[in-house]
Amino acid sequence: MAQNNDIKHKVFISYYHEDDQYYKDKFEALFGDIFINKSVGDGDIDDDLSANYIKRLIQEGYLTDTSVLVVLVGKNTYKRKHVDWEISAALSKKVGGYSGLLGLCLPDHPAYGKDEYSADDVPPRLVDNLKSGYAKLYDWTTSEKIIKARIEDAFDARINRKDKIDDTREQFKKNR
Image 1 (cartoon, one colour):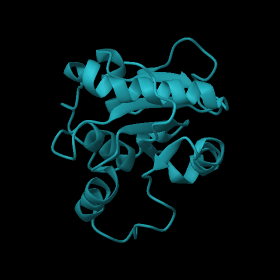
Image 2 (cartoon, one colour; image 1 turned 90 degrees about the vertical axis):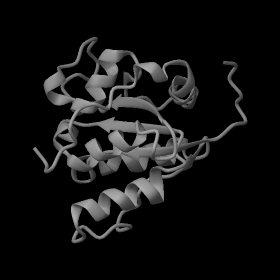
Image 3 (cartoon, rainbow, N blue to C red; image 1 turned 45 degrees about the vertical axis):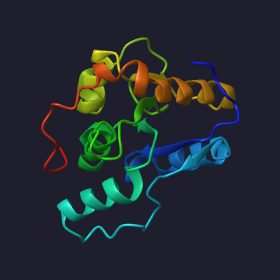
Image 4 (cartoon, helix red, strand yellow; image 1 turned 180 degrees about the vertical axis):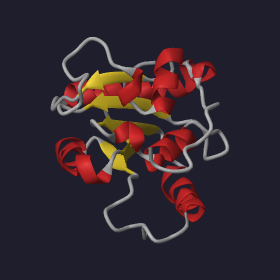
């Protein structure tokens, strides 16, 4: 598909709040003008709510019309149930249709700057979709041009690679 630089995709940023807030804030500051942010803001959802209610809020209130899910992959992101739930919802046709899936390996992650990653320290549902060819994992960048192209590729995957979506894994019940 031809890239249209005027289109702003609806992007949800999935990350581990405790470790990777700096990179989420930086991503929004660097690139917030090239996409429509559909992410959960700090304090938007009360942590004391039940897990099922939080999952439903994220699906219905944030991910329903998201076109691309960007996973900020830090050193502990693979352990987080909310990240797993967000990826699963983004890959679910029943939650507003499929979203493109893109992983960004953060500088504190062991795979950053390397050509390979270990499936042991990347969110498992993301790994499933990297292996199937639906998603892609790149190193963190501050280049707007590169991020635009990667978001556009993930957006196009919703149509061109949707047959490669793998959401068969059972969802996390708790953090690892």
